[in-house]
Amino acid sequence: MARELGLRTMCGCMTESSLLCTAAAHLGSLLDYADLDGPLLLAEDPCRGMQYDGGRMILPDAPGHGARFVSI
Image (cartoon, rainbow, N blue to C red):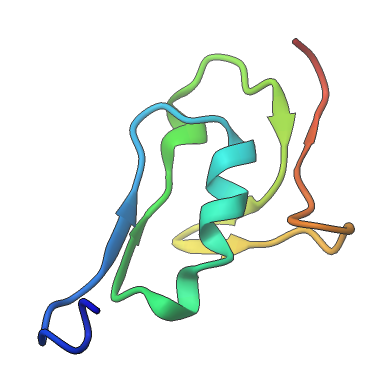
């Protein structure tokens, strides 16, 4: 709908774990902007998902979205 209206798309977060950001990153090809650096702002991320390499997001190759809990 946004594209039909000539609008740009963005997905962002604040202090989300890598669980949410990994799932959101799967929408990356549909977005104009992705601001998914929330896990980098956490003192401890209870999940493991996508990795960050400079400005690149690297998605895991595990089943589903690939993120998993490591501690609660």
